[in-house]
Length: 88
Length: 356
Image 1 (cartoon, rainbow over the protein chains, first blue to last red):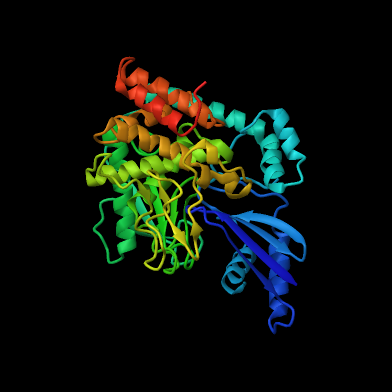
Image 2 (cartoon, rainbow over the protein chains, first blue to last red):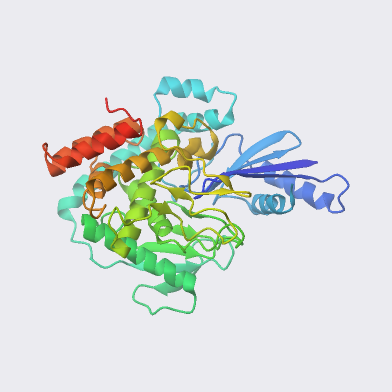
């Protein structure tokens, strides 16, 4: 499973993106569970969000959804920070 | 269509309905998304706006005078994301051990004082609204935002950004989003969104200059100068004096802000480039303020404030609409023969915004 996260906006307006490929990873199962929940709670179009809030685009195996700070689910928040931290 | 809670500021249509219809059918979700939501919410927004303006008209003569003192509360999210978090300092309470809390408290006070002393405005709603801020939001969080009700500050990751309370203009920037929400309520997308961002940078910078008693010539015109971690190659996050030159770093990339309409960036990202194209009205303000000299909040700031709060600036204003109103406001406030309106006119001309 390929999990891609792109973050735009924020006070600085600086974009960040990262991807994790879970194939062969020992914790692939956890990633999959997290990604499925995060995507299920996402939206088909980008929410406008709040002034200076981050906007996120999550793409999991070709399915793309959007979400924005501060209204993220726990799974979305966790997935985003894991991918941006561990992804390439 | 999700539910929009009471915390969210009002967003409204930027473009005519026929354009929205076309955008809503676009394959690019960055275009179709806002357009669809706008179409759906348009009537709801209209009624809310009507209520707001009626309230504004009714409130001015009738209400009792709001206090000249702020009513500040700082909360600590404890690195979580629940808002507002635990109350750690209320109005009039002594400073504690946490420098972040103390900086937020002082920044709220400086912003309140600037709007009151310079423009006679009582807090962000003009009616003494309590000022709330939450610090230590999330972990290593590289951002600060206004959620429609309060300010929220992250600690930064220490690698790219330090604590977001470090720059007083950042605190002023967030609170000015509140002022904009209660006044012109510029839609946070595309050109009106870039104007919304620019208002926050302009008054954020003025709050810093007011606090330091700096003239336009003395000021650095940087936004977030204290925010970058030592390893980052750059001066700040944005430069109103020279947009596009604030940083050029291996990790951060290069400051993408244009200074003039020739380099206007068309994008669906960042809510249609609100933090990018704000460089253009930011630079116009800088040019007007430095041409007029002295303390920037007294003339250029007053003109911008008059437009933001005057009731003629619409939620979907473009740069040219805003520019036109600043020239009008300069004439009304400082007279037809004055240098003020000429400086303002010239500033917009130099950034390539035509005043029709």
